[in-house]
Amino acid sequence: MRKADEVIISIPEGNIAISPSLSGNRNSYSTSINNNEIVTVTGMDPKLYKAAIEGNMDAFKEKHEEIETMLTPNKNTILHIHLTASSVSEAFVEEILSMCPTLLVKANVNGETLLHIASRYGHSIIVKKLIESSAKALPLTENTLIRAIRDDTKDTILHEAVIFEHIEIVDILTKEDPYISNFANGDGETPLYVAIEREYWDVAQKILNNCNSPSQDGPNGRTALHAAIIRNNKAHPRVDTMAFNGQNMTALDVAYRNLHNAPSQVIVNLVLFVCTLDNWYYLEIWD
Image (cartoon, helix red, strand yellow):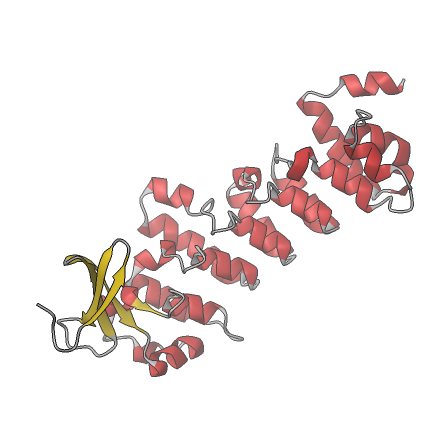
């Protein structure tokens, strides 16, 4: 029987019923499909949204049980909101997490965790705090996975730090977990490839320094070495085609012919890294 204040929405899978929760909170709603309870979501009161931006802890001290379900329409939590503010409070983040540790792994509608947001906005101190908090609050398996968790585009938190050129966070993440550099995103790009393709040479060098065997994979069979040579030899009319056409030109072949124009330290490190994997025979061709 339909409740007086209940809204019924028909979809192919059945009927969705949306009604105020039994708690009486006007910002709280329960959803169910065909009378099967799914979840109760507490909406974000505008005053609490403002408090989240400002890092006003007093507004949340009496709301322990509600914090996890306080979400915006895009499923951003209190801390997602706070980390996008112009001024971020380490104390606010720490206290909210002590009240609701599960926010560490809670993702928004785009699959972004707090670490994604903190890495994107360059909050290095918060990134450290989130990693420390995860080590204390989460099981070992989750603590290992939290740094490799990916958003809907399969970007890791290291991808975020690289894309926005936050070298300090790149340093933190790769020292904390060197294997995070091995994950490719939805476009097939590893963090090292992204750094080279965008010509963030200092970021690329940091990854090479901190990770013993960083994956250099890119899209369409390219590697970070391909990207490095191409990015720094744009005047050469055949670099791009030689690297990717049917002439069997590898990145090392291209590097040999164009190394004089490339950023020497990064290129040399990349060449040495590739050669130590399984490509020493390329050097024999050059003799």
